[in-house]
Image (cartoon, rainbow over all chains, first blue to last red; front, side):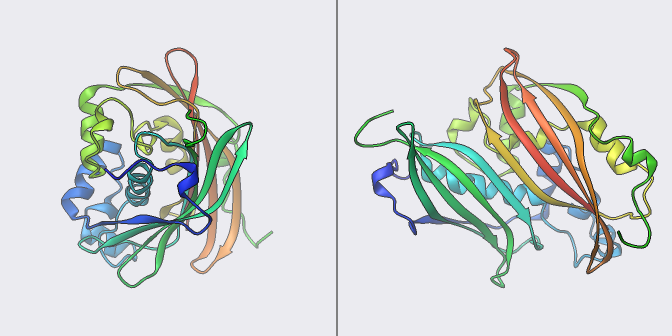
Length: 146
Length: 141
């Protein structure tokens, strides 16, 4: 876990440490079991191909979860995730890197609470953005501990 | 309006009908299994739900009715997810999940006729506090 992040430590443009994941079919099976999402495109290659896909594809929610981890790793114990959104724009295949990225796009204080808005996205190894979204986080301040 | 509607009466009749609640107990094994499935080793997830746990708190009846409602479009993809957090979901909580279909929109996409189905889900704990609100877009094509 990294050092805790404070409101004063970030600026618009601050980059969140990237998180790289490499899901296998086994992980998709685990995810199917844990989430109850047994849609066959996520573990049955023949079924996926018959549905016009290049092969087994990663659950959108799993990639979304990786983006969640990137944010909670960054926030540590002090920050709070308030909103998380993602649009599924492309395909992540198994046995390929998923690169999770984020960048602060806004920081603001409302009713003496310290917020940041973060742009988040996941990429496949071809550099295509497969999930894009935003998050809103509450951060501790060095001036006024929360 | 495009030439032919893919929105059946059955789908239309689901609009703004709240289904549920379906009740989930946040047990130790449930949290552990989910954290393992998303490959997130943060020890915090032994006591508190990771942000995307609502994926496992499924409004099953609504989802089944959406997926099985008669529709000429057979393939389905997840289009978007949104989560808003009000309180943490903790170990030992009992979460009630209610969902409703709030919007149907037919479009002409690159795969031909495409139907966007937007579903709102509310997650409430045993104290009656809304802990999370979710919105999901499913795409039939």
